[in-house]
Amino acid sequence: MTVKLGRTGLIVNKHGFGALPIQRRSVDDAVPILRGAFDAGINYFDTARMYTDSEEKIGRALGTVRKQFILATKTTAENGVELREHLETSLRLLKTDYIDVYQFHNPEHFPKPNDGTGLYEAVLEAKNAGKIRFIGITNHKIGVAIEAGESGLYDTMQFPFSYISGEKEIELVKLCEKTNTGFIAMKALCGGLLNDIGAAAAFMNTQSNVVPIWGIQTMNELEKLKTAIKNEKYPNAAQSARIEHDRAELQGDFCRSCGYCLPCPAGIKIFNCARMSLLLRRMPPAQWLTEQWRQEMEKINNCINCGHCKEHCPYKLDTPALLKKNYADYQTFLREQ
Ligand code: SF4
Ligand code: SF4
Image (cartoon, rainbow, N blue to C red):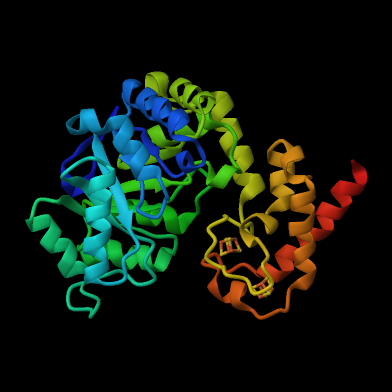
């Protein structure tokens, strides 16, 4: 199964590789994972300048086969000068002289011509110089994403999307289809809350204009992904039941782990602490019952009710209340161990 990535015209194999997690692996461990993904037919690799050494690992693993895959990276530059520097660094580390899809990485406001930042002008200049082929944007805020999608300034859009996504996200996918903007789905497992990759991949096969990027950091995960995407089937009865079950359980007010509420002046790791109840029940709980996570959860008691998290949550969650609820549940869970 392939997807035409909107107006870029790039033909992408349906399931792509998200290269954020390979930051956590050594070069010796990451290179075979990347090569294994490439050998399995994955031809879209998505990284970012801010993912520490992820670009360098891709350069080492895939530099010699550069023309055989589609390469996307991102910049958090805030002005044109910075963007040019970021791009040169990315090209050097990725061992290439062009990036297929160059994305603005989660900007607060989407860059546009004459907005005073010089970002859009710099990216056009890079395109004219042949250093990038297409201009993309990534975001976590639905409002920014919709406006960017409507602006016609971007060839691709990257946004969190999974089988538990709500109406707004589905609207965004449709908008991208209508405006011929390539849609790249991040967090197809909702930051670890969904644990059936087979169901998640089968769901994505029903979304004809969506390219999911799967964050892989171990050979075992790569094998699971390979199994999930083999034969590229639509959800079977068991997977449909799982999807319905998860939709029912996870609808509404839960933390999507986007991190937009940070920084927290009390140092609370909101992106995990505000969904601890779910993590304890949907993943092996031992990793959340360590001394380190006990201490992190204790920090919830230091909340000064500044309101920053609540104001910045794109899902309009009452984050302090959610943290307190998760703290109480965590204590109960600990007592029951
Ligand atoms: S309200 Fe509490 S949890 Fe939220 S940012 Fe402020 S101190 Fe942190
Ligand atoms: S509380 Fe809201 S902003 Fe913070 S991580 Fe969760 S979903 Fe994102």
